[in-house]
Image (cartoon, each protein chain N blue to C red):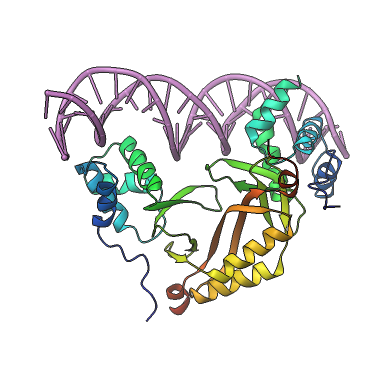
Length: 151
Length: 151
DNA sequence: CTTCATGCAAACCCTTTGCACGTCG
DNA sequence: CGACGTGCAAAGGGTTTGCATGAAG
């Protein structure tokens, strides 16, 4: 079968990362981690805040932003920029990769592709650049949304 | 020699694009175009506003945003997202391409690379994606900043 | 206990919008 | 003239911060 998409179903791994990095595992962070784990695709801070409100759990917006920032620094989640200019996050593995974002279901899959990196390095070289970093974001329809009938 | 970087030195081409698209060539737009032409690399709306203020010319912020939006639609400039999350713009040719941003001097060069696109399409395919769009941004040191002595 | 984290609300961006006035063609 | 564009100021989001209170280790 198709590889599973963002297989993290509970917040435990995120909390673990916090713990290992020496941060406290508090209730609000537990809740945020759980909310993130529940996301099927990219999400914004506002999405989490809305979910929190919908779930009757009270977490301050500030805490959400602070936790997202923290997890971002620890590379447990990554911030991506949608074409609309919105800032969104996706949870991901802490290895170098890129994201393919499904415009249909908003899920993301990690792209780890040596050839792609080679092509990038080559393109940079041709432009006379010493590439330090790069970001790639793909937008399209994922396998599942392609496979099923188009509504 | 190395290809010149963003060779637009005056605002005329931008105005021309506006004119051809049926928009009026007004004084404020002329000023914004000139400001953009003066930029050596990526710039934000705030940068232009600051330059305008410094140059003693009064343009409303709203006009700057509106003009940037307009030029963006006409593909005379393109919006890019810096790793910091800031929204910046770069002037560019209206063909499909990507940007390499120099982390030193902030200038950008357009990247048009068929192989790179092929690699992207291939990576998408492997992930089961039907790619609709993508964005790539390279960050590094440009030829000039590499060539000259590092300060 | 002592430090770290939270919540709240105010403060701060950045960007958009409504509207009366000005100006381009 | 008549439509289009501008400026201003206010509104609107999103994100950050200061500070007193509360929980974690």
